[in-house]
Image (cartoon, rainbow, N blue to C red; front, side, top):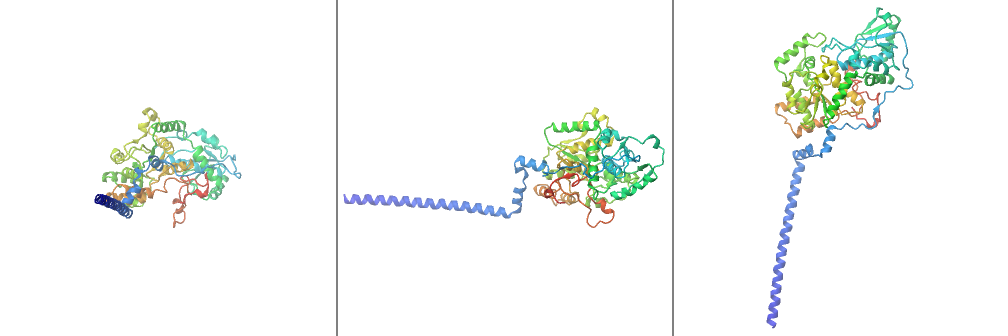
Length: 505
């Protein structure tokens, strides 16, 4: 009995030690495996945190963002809360004064050059206490458009909306048609003092004829009421004629009916622009020669010899269709994005345009939106067609100009006036280096390129900011040419808001 009891206790103790040993080894191995997993994860995270490319790919992979946030970044207008149009006269403003003195005007240039010039002439007529005769439009420019004022603008609305500011008549009174006139080329970017001095002409003449209307007023340092009068003329009085307004709005509705937001691309790649600027990058030798001959034979283009390479490096050339495609893709717009082409005939036709359509096949033209019958009345009238493009561009979700010409500046200013609608202004000078690296293989398309382009244009999307003054170091009257146009950014005179919210230039 005693021996059996001892044996039983012995066997029980021996079995317990085995279990303890087993569990001890199991726990040790389990802990060791957890330790190795932790160390491996830690090392991997540490390697990635020191690897700029792995970090860059995570932070730049735009499609990984929630879809709605990605769309907001692409399409939404910049923050402009509290900013609003303000064009009413101040309490000191003196309205219309009736004098039997008349000012006739010959507008010059394309549609938007004429529009800004006419707005200036409204202000000049007010300063000089003159009755303004409905301006004559330019029929001698490159476009050879035979349109008269009432073909493009709502003449009755123009007269009525400004009746508190100046007197406007359709034509000179019959008894003044044959009287001698003072024919003047008013100086460019002039101030109020200059025009007050010009009133001495009324001592000898009852009619002053102004031969050119563009850039006749300074961009800055004018009385607030004069600046606001320019805005009332530009954004309220110079409404397009009913046929243009109706078709423009109809085409916008058709674009909207597709249920997608659209870009209006002012693709300034027409024959006249490339010839005038001397930009031949991406063209064949035959095309370059054709443009050179056009420039040489166009009398009113003063500069004949232009270095195309220097023009491009300086940022003075319009982006090519291919460059526009690379640019929009780098910003993050998907290939399916609807893009309305606000332009005349693209030089080289489908050959050059295919470099854009291969990336963005959803290109839309007036001819694909409107019926031939709707466009028939505007055939061979470049300014009227430009007015339709203007309406569609102002109403677009995003406006992108490939060149900073008269239309680009006018549309951007109008969009700022209406609430700082998104306008992406390509940094053409900065982009040249990027495009050249792509061509030579020093850079490839992808997340790195996208990040560079997006960073470069973070503050070039139409956010509220003060109008920029002349470039540093430019002196004399040449400084006026380097200022930002009043009609490109009518803040602060015609847009009111909190100064603290301004984006500094």
